[in-house]
Every structure is written in structure tokens, then in C-alpha cells.
Image 1: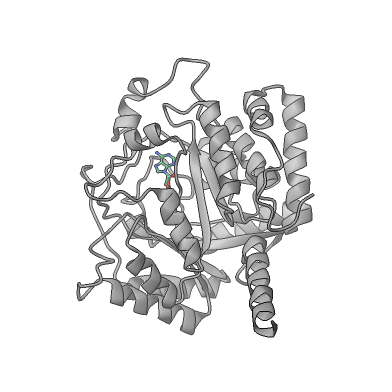
Image 2: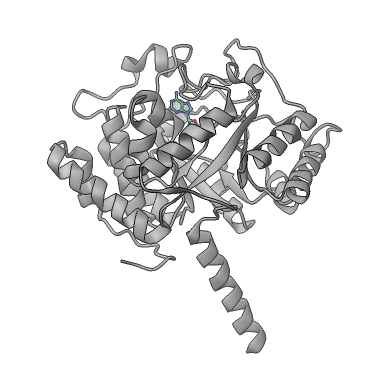
Amino acid sequence: MSTTSNDTALLTRDELLVWLHEDDPQKLETLWSWADDVRRSCVGDQVHLRGLIEFGNVCRRECLYCGIRKSRSLPRYRMLDAEILACAERAAELGFGTVVLQSGEDAQRMDPDAADGLSGFATLIRTIKERLGLAVTLSIGEHTDEVYRTLREAGADRFLLRFETSDPVLYHKIHPPIQGETRDRFAVLRALRELGYEVGSGVMVGIPGQSREILADDLLRFVELGLDMVGVGPFVPSPATPLGKHPEHFALPAGEQVPADETMAYKVLALTRLLRPYGNHPSTTALATVDRANGRRSGLQRGANVVMPNITPARYRAAYEIYPAKACLSTDDEAVLRGLHEQIRALGREPGFGRGDSKSILARRSSAAADAQQETTR
Ligand code: 5AD
């Protein structure tokens, strides 16, 4: 097996395609156990838990798959900084080492020139870091480098931005560009990495218009981008969106279209573990939504080592409806967490403690430090 900084793929594109076409249950069992073995030997048995706070659903985008797209009529909310802080305090009390602050792409909230904009949000991050000692992950969409830099300087540790699909034609179709903004998500991900964030991305599996060839290319991108975290989940049709209402307008002919089912999502997760063996990869909510009985657990047994329970205050949860019937709408955080701990232990694993940084970024930082050391002693 390769080193932590492995940036060449363990599997070729052709091999990935064979797995993406595979439907023999016995062969798939070998894939699941291969991914589970690699997970155990590279990142161990701890399952890192992240408290997810969906702090606002205001969004300037019109993504064709997403239930909080701008034009959808929906009660819109922005949590106050004090509410977010209270929620982070609760996360710390419950024993989380990380909070994930997720929202729609809200340019106003991150406006460097607005009184209630970027500087307030940066202060909030500083407070969460200093007062609670939590790692902070941001999932707030595309913004300028100034925004990303300010938040990084305030102490944000990690950033999640899925590139959704590596096919530029499909990407533009499902993710209409905003006029005047030309930077693609790959460039954004590189910029985030340059700023020193631990970087996560990922894709949806089974978006209408997605072929197995596209998916194989997505997987190879995870390697090329050197991702520290990869989130993959099945596409869940959201009826109030174009892709939910009329998937047939977008889908490829039967046989070519990737199904949005749990088996395909597990395959992509398992292959992700093989390609990014040291990364922190979640068993996602979308997986738990399409496979209610087993999704979360099976994800953990097929490559995942992270779970992100939702700790958004109850009154906001229904309005953060990216897709309907999202799993984990239960709002008794403590009971959810207890159940999760039991589930993790029943798998012979342990709930993680502390920040749970990814091993890939730790390796990157120590090799950067060694390089700097060499520079100074030269
Ligand atoms: N089904 C599944 N995942 C979705 N996301 C958005 N809409 C859907 C949907 N209908 C995912 C996207 C986004 C993440 C926050 O949620 O991949 O990046």
C-alpha cells in the first residue's frame, strides 16, 4: 500500500469502471471487505462525530437538484450568531470535537463590507475556537478568496465544497453559473488548499445525466485533488426542483444512466476509501435516507469513518430541506448521540474523541514542516 501522500490512484480508470458495472453480490462483498480492511489499517476503528449546524438556508444559487435553490418558495432563515454559538456550546457539552457550519450560498452574510457580514461571522469562529476549543468546518459554498482568507485567519480549520460532477457539460446544466463568475470548483478547491484548509469535496451518485464513465473520472479527481475528506451520497429527487420533477429530461438512456440507489453509492464510497485511504470519509445522511434501515451502518462498514449528526435547532430543521424526508430529523440530540454510540460499539468500533483531523492533512503538514526545517538549515 502506498504512502500518506499518495497522489497516484491505486486503481486504473478501467478497473474503476469494472467495479461500477459489477452487480454480482459475491464480488461486491469482496469490495466491501477490501474497503473495510483499508479503512481499518489506514485510519483505525474510531468513528469521528461532527455536529452539523445548518445555520441558514438563504441561497443565491439555482442548482437544479437542490431543495433550497433560490427560486423555491420556502421560509428562509439565518440563525443569529448568538444562536449558532449556543448550538456550538451544546455540541461541546455533548462531546463533539468538531462543528460543521453549513448554509446556503449567502453572499450577503459573507459580505466584507456589510456591518452584519463577514467580520461578525469571523468573530463567531474566533469565539468558538477560543472558548470551546472545537475544530470548525465550513460548508458555505463559493465565495471570494478574501472571504476564505478572513475565515481561515479567524481559525476555521476545514472546508467542504463538493464539485458534484467532474463533467463540465453536466455541471453547467445542473448548476447554472452566476454571471461574471468564471472560477470553477476545482480552482476554488485548490485555492482553499493553498490557504491551509483541510479540504473536502465529493459528488452525488445517480444525478440524471451521469454515466459510469463520468463517475470513474470523479473518483480519479479525488486523487488528483489530494482530498482530505470525501462525501458521497445518492441523489435524492427533491420534488420541488427541475431534476426532481422531470428527471426524464436529463437522464441518459437506460443502461447508461447511473442509478441513484444505495448499492451504487456504497460502491463509490468503497472505491473512495481505496483511492484516498487516509482520508476522513462520512457515512452520509443521503445514504441513511435511501437505506433507512442500514444506510449509516453499512456506510461505516464499507469505507466510512465519520458521521455528521444534525444538531440544528428543531425550529429550523424543516426549512433546510435540500431533499425531502432527510434522515435524522429527530431532535433529541442526546438520544440520537447515545443511539449512535451504541451502533458504533456494536460494530466493534469506538466513537472518536478530540478533533479527528484527517491523517492526510497531518502528513501534509509534517512534510511541509520538514521542508521548512531543511530550508532553514541549508
Ligand atoms: N440529493 C442528494 N444530495 C443533494 N445535495 C443537494 N441536493 C441533493 C439532492 N437532491 C448535496 C449536494 C451538496 C450537499 C450539501 O448536498 O452534493 O453539495
